[in-house]
Image (tube, rainbow, N blue to C red; front, side):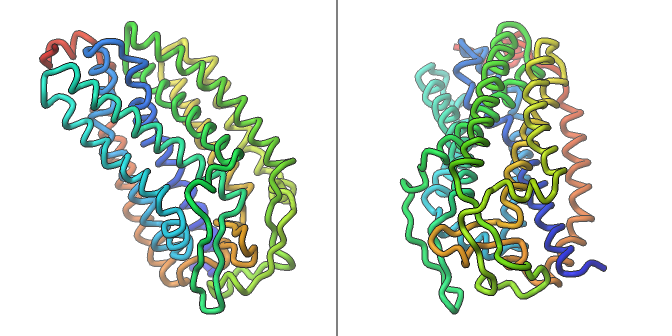
Amino acid sequence: MFDYESLRVIWWALLGILLIAFAIMDGFDFGIAALLRVLGRSNDERLVVLETIEPVWEGNQVWFVLGGGAAFAAWPMLYAVSFSGMYLAIALVLLAFILRPVGFNFRGKVHDSRWANLWDWVLVGSGIVVMLITGVAFGNLFLGVPFKFDGDLRMTWSGSFFELLHPFALVAGLVSLTMLLAHGACWAVLKTDGAVNDRAVRMARLFTLTYIVLYVLAGIWLAYGVPGFSIVGPAVTDGPSNPLFKEVAHGSSWFASYMRYPWFWLAPAVAILGAIGVQLTVARRGLGAFLCSSLMVAGTILSAGFALFPFLLPSSLDPKSSLTIWDASSSKGTLALMLGATVVFLPIIIAYTSWVFSVVRGRVTLEHVRQSTHHY
């Protein structure tokens, strides 16, 4: 049906789609959690903010699970190197994922303002940690991460957690943070009313503007201050999954793939136009701003993926050990089998998710919260 090269490209695209779905679907509820104390000034207002995501946040995490599963099964080397080398960073992200449901479930167990405030800050912290560290991780992909393989493909990692906090990576982290804070604010604009809604409009405008500045800064820095990786000679696109069978040069431009495939420029254009669209539509307080922020998120992730292509995980320690889509995948049979399962189950997941969101459509109001909860 598909040759090995095509399957690798398809799964690279599917991994990107799953990352985009995770960022859009789980990103807005992390943004909401991080903005909880800003959007809600009283306990009732904070309950309004939380009610906008409580029916859907658990379902949104399916995209995180699917993305991790796809990386494990389709790109085992990528999964092994990144999860082993970035262990502390990933552990912090997972801790934030663990604390978030605890915060949702424990916040209302004791009717005391100090108890509620404690779990509010847990939710705020969990949102910020995930959004920031995810962006820092993406930034480090462009810098290269310190790993290498020996002749038997045994991996050695020589970096530390704090070495990941390079200034460029921190800027990438701030791009991720401001982007998803704006995305979360747009969700609040869609789902709330009154004073909470007014604050959400202001936050959406503030963070999209900040995002545009940081995104452009990161692009300029990437173009002129971060050396890129490139495969020397013709790439073997249907060969065995062994990264040591190629030669890699370090020092080219990360935008070389954009020169090779000019349509890649659509991705950063969509990101910027999405952010501008939020600025122009958020005052209407409808679905338009959220759709624009979703385009902003999709365009940002696509622009990073297109710049990296065909690399998945470049190595700063030994460029030859860098993982690409041509030499880090599972076997042809595994990719084909997974593709068949995806064709069957992904539409079911999308259909069910769409039905859930149609059921919980509408705004959450203060009157609804006051009628259905005990307040302090």
